[in-house]
Image (cartoon, rainbow, N blue to C red; front, top):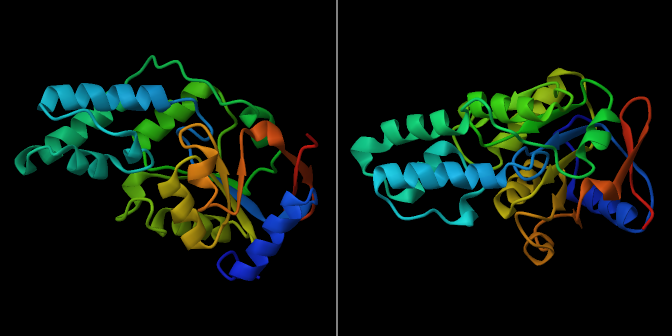
Length: 239
């Protein structure tokens, strides 16, 4: 089984087993970054506010979380002849040095429990922003980043997570891939790409994520891992 051949039925079986308190073996893990691993949503929204003020457009809605800088600028209503400047300015604001960001609850323990090489970050942030924000947390570096600079279509399109799965495949990962996301757009992207999709609340509510994800958790404290060879054993922590 390669990372792209998992069927919807197999994913549903894995999700049901997890929900019933069982353990499932997965081959790899893909994470969104902002609002999933990193407590950066306030920083993101502040960057949007500054850009909107500079370009004289209305405040941006929270529904844009999970989308690329290009998609955010387009949704903001910035004049067409100012798009390139607004995108560059947003990236500059978002990647500014001196940001103090932290990992969300349970994240550090969870990522440190994963074998090296079997997990990556799939984010809509541009590459400089992704590296600046993730680096500011002190978390263990992923095997790779797929960023907004690497795709032509933003979440909820499956392209970002499809590229993440391809990166895992290049590293010899074969089997079920879990994706963890905090937005509806991200969950839809991951599920359409063929991932076992776990929503984590915070940016969106349980009610918003549950119809889209295979499983929804409130924090990474609810997940635990058991190293297997190959892959990772995944289970819900006892409540």
